[in-house]
Structure formats: structure tokens, C-alpha cells
Amino acid sequence: MPKPGEGILQDRIFSDISEQFVHGDVLVINNTKVIPARLFGEKPSGGKLEIFVERIQSDKIAVCMIRANRSPKINSTISVSGQAASIIDRQGIFFVIALQSGDWQTLTATAGDIPLPPYIQRQTTRPPRKTYPVIKPSMLKNPGPSQHQPPVYILIHRYYRRLKTKA
Image (cartoon, rainbow, N blue to C red; front, side, top):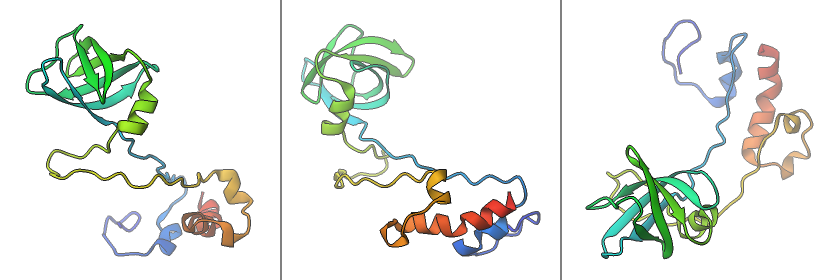
């Protein structure tokens, strides 16, 4: 971690984090997660498709990238994880796909796989779905009993007051 104002790298521990901030700094806690957006499908010819859901526009329509030996044509019908779908448009490298039944949220949740970069040559295994608590600023100001709080919450709460005085 660079020392403030000097650019010199130092090894530090998390409990020293409040010493790294100067007035006006902002600490951002990333609460993102990888969704199971990788699906598999087939063309009517039997050709295999790998489908990566880029964004879901509505229950039935999603913008996706498709990996195939030959790209499917607009207005063609494909099977996405056993569900019938149609290619309704192409926008550069993306395909707009409409499901004929079901919805994209359910399909990705039930049949989706965690996307891996192409250089990782293994199948993913779905970890058990766990829920992690969302930490809200109001929770930091009024914490409950610490024995019931997850370790990340305790750690953030412990340093919240120190960080607040730096702001």
C-alpha cells in the first residue's frame, strides 16, 4: 500500500487502514457478485452454443454473446438450456435473444453456470448458495450484539469511528 503523499509501497495490516486516509478520501466497499450467466444451447442443426448473458432487458429478452462454430442467423430458433428461444437482433458482437417461455432470471438461476475466462480449462462446480449480510451505514451507527454479527461487519464497525473522524 502506498504511503499517503509519498508513493512509497509498504506492507501494512488492515487495522492500520485509518492511517492511510486523508481528509476527503472515500472508502468504497464493493458488494458485487458473479451471477451464473453462462448457459449452453443448440441450433436446430445440432450445433453447440455457449451463451453468455450480458444483460437482461425484460423477462423474455436478453442481450447475449454467443460462441459457436457458425453464428446463428437473425430470426432463427435455438434452444437455450432446453428452452426454445429466437434470435431477434444482432448488435455488433451481441445477440438479442427472446425466450418463447419462461424468464431469464429463472433460467440463469437454475441452469446457469459461473462464467470462467477461456484460459481456465475446467468445469465450474456450483457452490452452495449462501446469503451474506448487506452492510448499511445505519447498521454501522447502531450495531447489535457483536456475537451475532459476521466477521466483516465487526471489522468494518471497529474502524468506522476512526474513519469517520478522518472525513
